Amino acid sequence: MTAFVTGDLARARSRFLRTGRPALADPGRSVPRPIAGSWRRSAQAGVDAKGSATRQVTVTSTTLLARCAQIPMRQLVGQLGSLEVGVVLSDDESHVLARAVCGRTAATLLNGIDLAPGFDFSEGFVGTNGVGTVIETHRPIYVEGPAHFQERFLRYVCAGAPILHPDTKQLLGVLDLTCDIRDASPMMQTVALQAAHAIEQQLRVATARPGAVQPDRRPGGGRAYPVPLRQSVEEPAPDREPLRPSMGPTEVHRAPLPEAETRPEFVDGVSLSRGTRSSVWQLARQELRGSLRRDEATLLLGEIGVGKVALVNEVASLHRLHVHVLTADMIAQTGLPGLLGDLGDEDAPLTGDPVLVLRNVHLLPAHSLSELRRFLRAPRVHGAPSRVVLTAERLTEDEESPLSALLPFIARTIVVPPLRERRRDIPAIAQSLLDALEPGRHRALAPEVTRILAAGYWPGNIHQLSDALRFAARHRPQGMISTGDLPPHAFSTALRPLTELQRQERISIITTLYRVHSNRSAAARALGISRATLYRRLREYGLD
Image 1 (cartoon, rainbow, N blue to C red):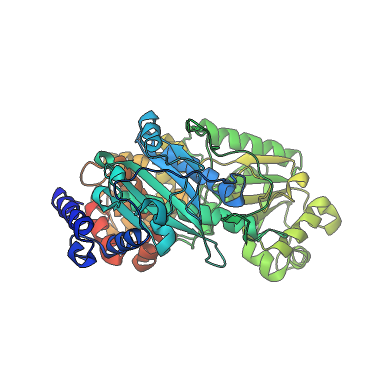
Image 2: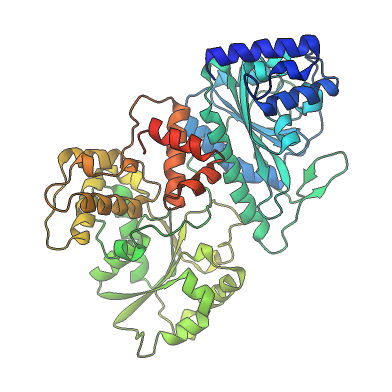
């Protein structure tokens, strides 16, 4: 909000508290309607606007919700870097279960209002806030300074997003970002929504496994997931000193992305090792080469579009091996036994010395995973090649992973690096992709283009880079490709300097647009904002 709007909001709050008449709060103008509604509920509940009482409650931090939130919260802390923000998780009773903080100042700030595990932030007890008001409305909320009901929260800004059960859409809790009003930005709302969606994805994976326990009401309030978990979140303590989470690399299991304009099969045939200077890519090649030489069952893990099958093709060609790819869709529709039986017929002969690649096995339904497990026990018994390579999106190191039942039969796991870890290789990779897009044309990229591509943010990795080059080649059918030919998402920076939160929102928008294949209506829904807001953000961030 601007200082003018914040000033109007403060005056409206004062009038409301003085008169007790909601109409004078001018809802919908200087006071957003959700805030005005929360003020009414707070007053009706008898909340003392000048009060500072706190209420401790008994919480269980070893719930499935707390566990599924652990990695997204850690990841968010890593993304926010040195920004002084607290990340808070609550259950559906507004009881704080866990928190993570960026910096000591944020910890002190949150401790000043008891925003810590084991404290009650229900709207009926402390008034308008980013936890309790979300629980009351089941909607995201951005509460800035004077929008709070209680005076002690006036120097704070919080953005809360609901966490819903992925199947039943039952409200399970809230993910909240809180910081000093001087450090705040409305972009916090988008960041909170993205983190809440990541937690919901973790819940989807956890509750989809056989025998998963569904939420149930426990005595004393809250919804429990009675599954024993590792201790991983901040526990209530008398001094409420925050636990700073590990900053090690983590990955979140994501839902499958829609197919990009450039089909994966295009990237499969492109050499991604041309002029490589990346030690992580070279290590992955070396490990895969050893696995194929020893006839080991191998699992390639990596983000979408990193070139896992392309890597297999490269290494296999060095040893004159022939690659046969079965996709997750093919396996789910036809069944693995049927596909393996068809490999030997005249329509799909096993030529030469074969390597069988089972692509995106993390997307397989439970019955197909069972078939795959039986096959991996003894592939030769099924008449299939002994060299078997599975590919999957990189998952969390979690015993509840859908691939956990396969791991005993996999000799080696190899992590294929994302494009952001191969920045020095991007110019050579881009030239290889461009040559493959236009065979025999000998097109070139301007030096400034290669610099921009190397600095770009590529959520779809090499698949998305190839999409950008296809766009540029269509824009300029002849001659050297220049910066003006690139699509907006190829640029890593906006048209003006951005705060860290704004940078994170820009990344979120780029990622979401890629996931929904540039469908802006779908992107706005996924981001939890209106289409008008999305179009405004696209203009602000140079993405339109």
